[in-house]
Amino acid sequence: MRLLLRPLKGLDPFLVLLTLVVLLASLLPARGQAVIWFEGATDVAIVLLFFLHGAKLSREAILAGIGNWRLHLLVLASSFLLFPLLGWTLAQSATAITTPEIVSGLLFLSLLPSTVQSSIAFTAMARGNVPAAVCSASLSNIVGIVLTPVLVGLLIHVPGQAPGISTDAILSIMLQLLLPFVAGHLSRPLIGGFVARHRAILSQVDRSSILLVVYTAFSAAVVGGIWQRTEAADLLAILLLSAVLLAMVMGANLFVARRIGLPRGDEIVLLFCGSKKSLVSGVPMAGAIFAPVQVGIIILPLMIFHQLQLFVCAVAAGRYARATAGEAA
Image (cartoon, rainbow, N blue to C red; front, side, top):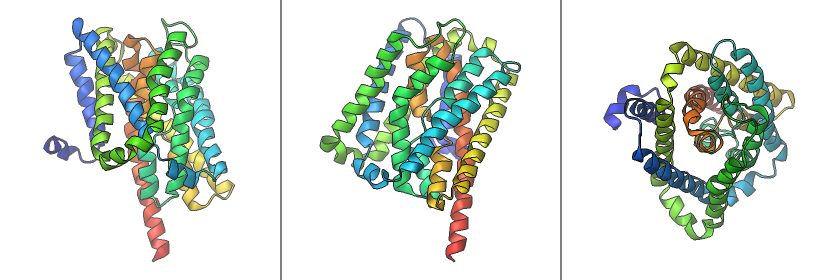
């Protein structure tokens, strides 16, 4: 697999695998009895995914950065106020250039929590405040499990689906996402050492779970006719709208950080934690909230935004690191 991915070194290898999974689902979607098996496996994978996320949440790292409350509030405001506002504004203008389902997907990604692993990794690369990044990103994910479904119910109406969020969806989120997350974190005193020693292996379990969820979602979407309703112009519109959304959020965060005089380490945290959206949380949430046939097209903007944010943040982190090294020289 590494040999296959080597020519695509500029891309995130996980995104390449995601693309291959979408292609596989497009050519060989799960049908008949296989759908039941894949849906059951997906439910188990999501529970395991959030259990491990809870188990990996370090209380020590959170306590080390929790005192920086102003920064954490800024990150939360970026994730759950600024992003939704800009996403909703773009969605209103996007109705003229793409389908209602893609507009809903664009708005959905704007309501998601921040990433954890990549936000911390980019903050470290840029020589920012890593303990604060751990705390901010973790807090965003915990809040997002509850707040994202509420915002979806208030702001998104998918054609063919009743307005608001159903009781079944709320129950599914509680049982599949929140309860395993809490159970995993409470189990950390017992399994924390195992999780720390096998972090690389467990990371592959995370990614494999997402690949399974994406395959199941796109299988249902393909059977429901996603590629008959989506054209190349729609994919280009997603890329353009995602770029505009990301540029506005990063620009706003950078402006706020410098206007209020945040230290550079905290500025880096706000820029990265406040501008990223979680594919790991978003895909399971979409599966719990939306009808199976709609999940594939709902998460399509998120998958494109995911690669774009990684590319842009990698460039920004490199510039911060070079600037810091130059000042230290």
